[in-house]
Length: 118
Image 1 (cartoon, rainbow, N blue to C red):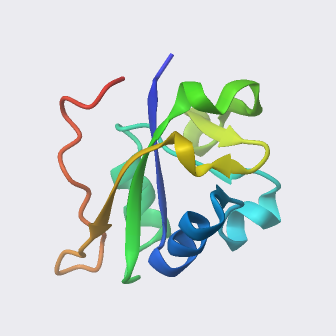
Image 2: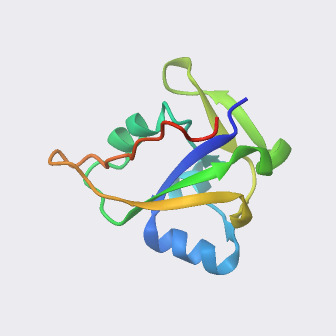
């Protein structure tokens, strides 16, 4: 099992979660009924497909084990398993956050995640 998963979110929404101690999701998460996450090998594609030409984004590394049984790995894009959290995320599960810049084509640039805990 992967121990670190990643969430891309608008900084304003993330700052609100930091103040309240709980992340309840972005509008797409709320509409879908779960919080979308990506593994390290999925996060760049997620950024390019879902967050192109958006500014003010945060990438957060999340301790997947801290989310317990509410975290499910479910098929999504092309049958790949993606982590989905059914319920709010306690901010204590956050390992770190980074502000994302965009490349010339408008895709968020994901930092090198090599060496991150699996």
